[in-house]
Length: 65
Image (tube, rainbow, N blue to C red):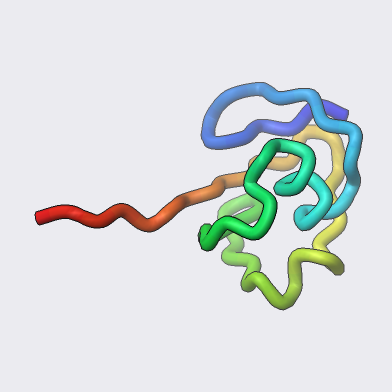
């Protein structure tokens, strides 16, 4: 299915946010996620079903000064 990941069209096989994160190599990384501009907490990613055309944002924290 085709989704938009961080502004880039991306083809994925999985249909839940948790599975897509695993498929794309995020695994257990500490990231923030949103689907169609709605924040999805880590505890809800297994239940967050994706549809073709959904817009997914994945943001990783950064350190620095």
